[in-house]
Length: 181
Image 1 (cartoon, rainbow, N blue to C red):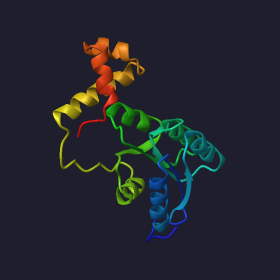
Image 2: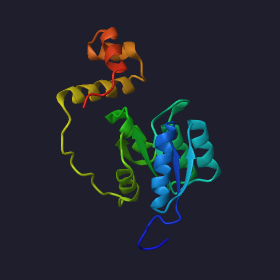
Image 3: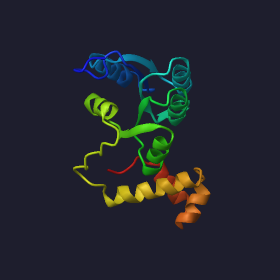
């Protein structure tokens, strides 16, 4: 490892089911000095994490065969010093907290570019994230709250609706939509 490049020769596991994105990110990270391995499923990511635990990992939250947090948990058991971040297009506070509890060091919303991902991977522990230029809208805050309660209710729609004093079908419509900006 050189002083110019702190990641030169370090291993990086990328887990994402979006093949074009995965390939672009792999090339970008190789150009930055990582030895990159890729996986497109939770099962393949967990196998890679167990067989040869990487130094770093970037894992998509929602994969076709399950939840990327299972990969984070497996990686953290195999290599407690591994630095992993979670990428997601369906971000909410509850899953971000869960990701950190399972061993992730950061949580980025898609679309995230290679520079943002690289900077998150190499950030010094304890570094505070920059304040967002645009704070969350009221609609986004409402959506985050609903997602948090939904996660606390173990993804039980009826129980979540009851706790939020909301009609179940209304809640289902909200949950089916993407997060507001």
